[in-house]
Length: 393
Ligand code: LMR
Image (cartoon, rainbow, N blue to C red; front, side, top):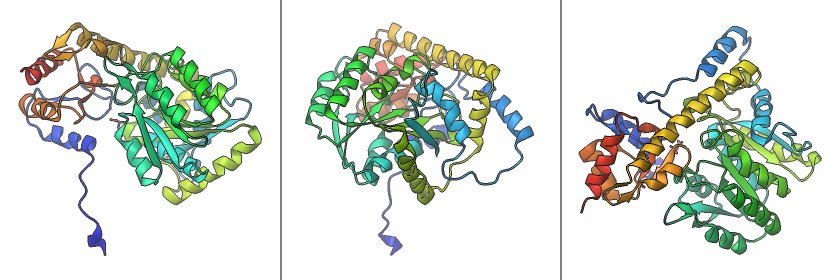
């Protein structure tokens, strides 16, 4: 029976981690999976997390089960940062639960949508490959539309057309900020329009906010989410702390449900609890507990926000250097300067991506996606020269 299970290809993005580790070249460059790196190429544990972990070690007196919702102190402490300090629950209309990372949050949001009767999901493409994978695994129908046009701007016409074509009762998945893989985000004015269109059409927005704070700032990066929530009656929000707290392998995420009225929230969430129980029972505690301890302590919040500022500044600096290069071979580097977050796509063919790896030791996703945080002041010139080399006629 089990021989029916055919060999599957390894996840292309995660496979890069091993390929890069096995490359003996000292000047290799890892631009693969999305982890932040300092200018010396390290991915250190945040100082605020180290301090919180120390506290946790000293004060945690039990590791008994918490339940499928995880650490609700964490879930609630995050809400003012995500939904705004004024009224983070929007009058009790929003509540959430902890998930294993951003992937767990997306999985649970989509499973909840399916349970509620959603059959079709609209999504701008390209998107994070795991989005489509989860949609397929849940048996939802996926309808794509073009996220951006040539020249690196959002393709609003495609989005408008998709919303027009969508049926009432469909869902739409939007990246809250720092689009993965394009780094091309909606402007505030575009979010204003999108919020109105979603409201008029009655689409269920599912907003994936996995990089808050890595684009323009914690408040700035929440503009679109908050704008949409102010208009529509219901929404699902998938949140990740894996990047903005540097907790990748600890898997820290949350899913939030916004309902039309406060008395509907717990019924909706109880479905999340049931789905979680059947999938992972309850999320891992450690990382979320550390985030809670950061968020409950003003001094640690200040330390955290400072660390986020530093990350963002460095990524802006790298992006500035790329843009300053002008062109590399046939590639226009200027748009990378104004894109946001960890990712951008270098328009390379699969053969050119392979040549980047084999000839130059530069590891990037097959789509040409780069993690800009993998570039440093020490390797950026080599990267630009490699792009020029592989795209030379
Ligand atoms: C990425 O896209 O590199 C990250 O979101 C990590 C992942 O899980 O794919």
